[in-house]
Image (cartoon, rainbow, N blue to C red; front, side):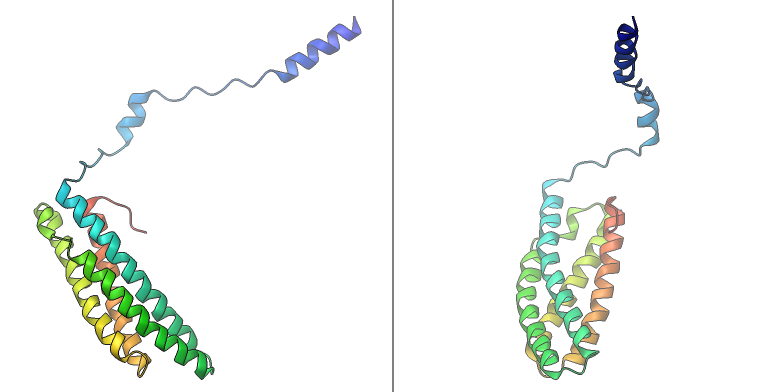
Length: 172
């Protein structure tokens, strides 16, 4: 008898707890905003170009941050190496930015989104020109080149945030 009651208690203890009932599907879908329309082929091409150009922007950011970090130390060898690397990264970045920018046609978007798309493309053009100057002079004069690139990177990031907001993507 005692053994039977122990087995019954053990079986009851192993039963899973009841799962909560999810809310009805219509209440969940009512809370979500409508899904954006899928991009057309020209918009997809623009976004692929932006992805390629963003690789180049990331290279410039890496080079600039390396130079900024070494400027705070008294190690002139590391500072010189960082400046030379910034010049090399600017050269590589320029290729990515130019390649990606060639695919980015702002006319792929409708009127309210076209202006942020055009502004983003303009900032990429500006970065591309600075990357060329950076490639040629970063090893000799890293401080002014870095300062110029930092300003242009800030402008690019604000244009990218405006574009992402315009097409309905979250900002990182």
